[in-house]
Image (cartoon, rainbow, N blue to C red; front, side, top):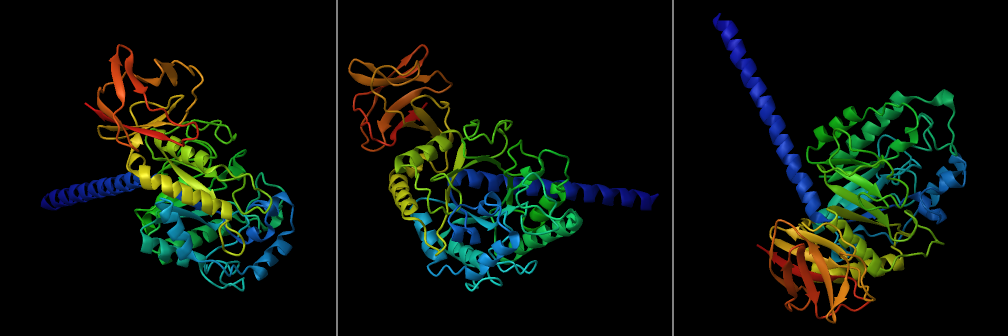
Length: 450
């Protein structure tokens, strides 16, 4: 009887320790997710041998290139101007706080010294340098988190089960899901073992088998990642609702809740996980020699501000040139973002979406009882809407919806000048006696809440 009683005590103790361990892990990941939300702005890098063709990262698929001939591009890849430190210093000066790099895109080429395949930047190119190793060292030195994009699909390996992307067909006789799955997990193990702390694994390509039943065995793969690095987040660009094991939700070319790009038709916004919107500077993810349709710096800054006001991070993409340098247009945009963030970064970093939801005139961000009012729509020709900017007694005015907070004072963030306001039955009306100029990117007001 004593033995049974002792065994019972040991079982209870073991269960208690297990529950405690799960709680610790949960608390740890909660802190990691909060830190991710605080960082607000990251740089996305689409770079690989596809940059040599100057037609984006999908060129192999879109041009129906022979996979064997495409692989020979590696023999000429030698980005003599690449400097991870110069990249990271520029990103840091722009105000970015993390970097997401394409470790392996859909073309199957690995940008690190992978033991799982010789088709990588060290073994297959004259360049012979481990790009991820250099990026990892530079990010660590400058305090930026390194996240790694990893493709679930592969146009090169013959054991990958071909899905909806039919322009790079594989022989069905060579399909072997078990060997391909083992290959992916071996590579993920390398990335999470040999390159220091990784902030996140950013998956893409799962939608290749979206139209039919396919078991990606994500639970097992996610558990592997969290086991190797418990603080490594997982995100998956599958354009659907987050599934168990994922730590943040992704939105491609749209802010959360929008579907202008057509990727988010069925993608409800999670109210549990951090959000991230990935967007391009022009129209292409990878380097394009013809795509000069870059957004203005003001437009990119407004997207960053809108993302923050919608409780989301912005992951801004750059497609580096094949020589290892960043396009001139991208550098200029980063410099302009840096100038903005130097002045107004405190209204973005460490904030959450404000108590006032997005409005026609802009968005709000918030830290405690400090509310930042970002006026992005500077239309001055009459009333925009019931909650838009309008002229009252010669001043521009807008209404903040009624909420649980009242306002003690409002000042302009750029000058410190006081802003007139009055409480009305339907909310608080704010008067801008000092009008923003029509080309002002973001007029930021700081409201102290009661």
